[in-house]
Image (tube, rainbow, N blue to C red):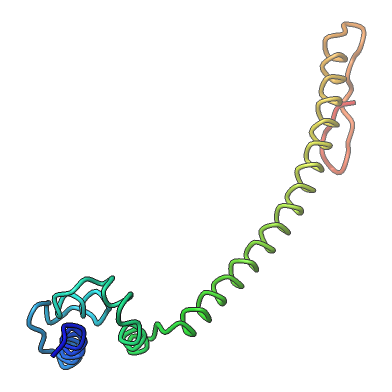
Length: 139
């Protein structure tokens, strides 16, 4: 039997042993993967990927990672990420508006504070209490 056919047979037997819970070279608890099949068959993972892509596709299909499933999962994750980006950009716009409003209010309060401080430091000015909104306030 040619080496190529023997390796294919070894890979198929390794896959079967892992699926049936009776591997020889890997731990029984190890999950099915291309790496575990390669180790069980005593070949490299690149051998499976490069020389036996049909076996690699079969393993991926068995573990739910065939190319279509992977593509759909990646598309779902991409769409979710894009939606998150859209929401975060909207939040940035809203927060930027709040920052501008707070900066304006802060500037107004600083101006008012400096006017009040100037009035307090002026000996000729006497501040009288007055009621505003039910609270004592000074003018």
